[in-house]
Image 1: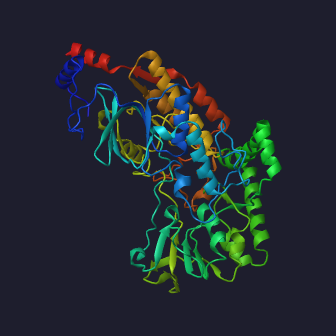
Image 2: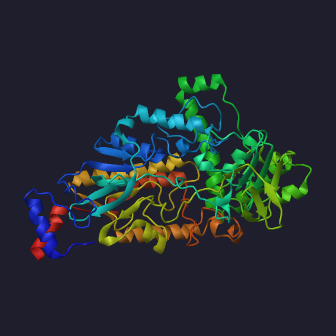
Image 3: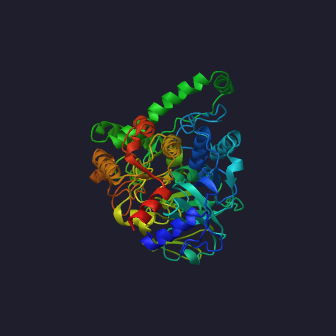
Length: 542
């Protein structure tokens, strides 16, 4: 993708004359490349990541930005997921922005609709809505090396240009369709939990749920009492802790509103507890293996409490892999659902789906009216991370690079050969404590770089190859302490793992370290330059 000297000289002459010119093979021949970008920053995605970055930009006084969102509102995962029983599986006090805590959660683990309203309220309060273009889907983005601009091509044929580009599309945006023979032949209703159809009435119907991950743990108890028959097909059981949930009383909500320090104190406690369970046990497995063993025993106690009289059923529901290899969750009634007369746990492998039901390999066919696939999402896979093609320097495409060379990014944000690009959910970026904490840290990181480029009067900022490689080596070294490298994860069938056998979802550090590094990483790790200076140097060299 790099230009030869003659082309660089031609473009330099046009630049000096203030002339716009179309980039060869740009895909936007109808519109010349502008001398100045349409926006300083383009953010792709208006979920929690996009909202958080927009707020950080505004805090820094950067108003020239736009958010491109393929759907019709903010919210991301919490906008799209509406299946019965959906709720946060980290306490509401922790699962929110630190600078905008909500005193009005109805429960300790808030229902999903409240998270969506929270996202809408935050977006409105901080002026994010006027910056958003809804129902606008990105096709691909190409870095124009001669101008230090990102050309962002939309599905409608339009092109936008920005100095900086931020991928904020999140991870849970591409529902995974199960690869089961005959799925398309089923004549009843089929829906994925990520595309829930509210018009489908489950009352008195024969329903099958394929999948027993965190989504199914919430869904199954919510529909078990409504349906005539519920068959739950399990390939891999899940670790389920007791859920310390409760309705938040009115007097406590009043205390939160009048004395915000009270809510901050509660948040500090829930942060510490979540960090211990979700970070300490998983990330520091080698140092403190007792935490994993303790968590496993707590899950087994929860299972025994809900199913005290059926050891065979308990055995089927007990994972054979270690706690943390696959995303664990919380529930006080998931296991209990399988003791109902109309609910069956099916562990025999599925042979095929017929026109009227599901046949397992033992030859039995169970008739159903509705098939629900709770089979999760494509996460660290080509086509989802990133969610659109991102072409950097020298003709390198980000998804292809990760697919071939392992998922890696400096501080989970930046990758060499992708100048002026920042990812909000990058490899080894998510902290187990809260998605919001990751968003705040990565927003701080990206905005620091943008501000520094402004301060220096430069048009390009790119992470150095050396700092990037040293960071990745450090991540790989730290990974050796995690539960992911233990043999107990072999049977987990977890989306934490990618095609390379790596587990690039969770950051192998504490949340405190993540935030500290976002605020203090050496700016010298980045290279700053200016397009005009590089063109002039190339012209002089020629």
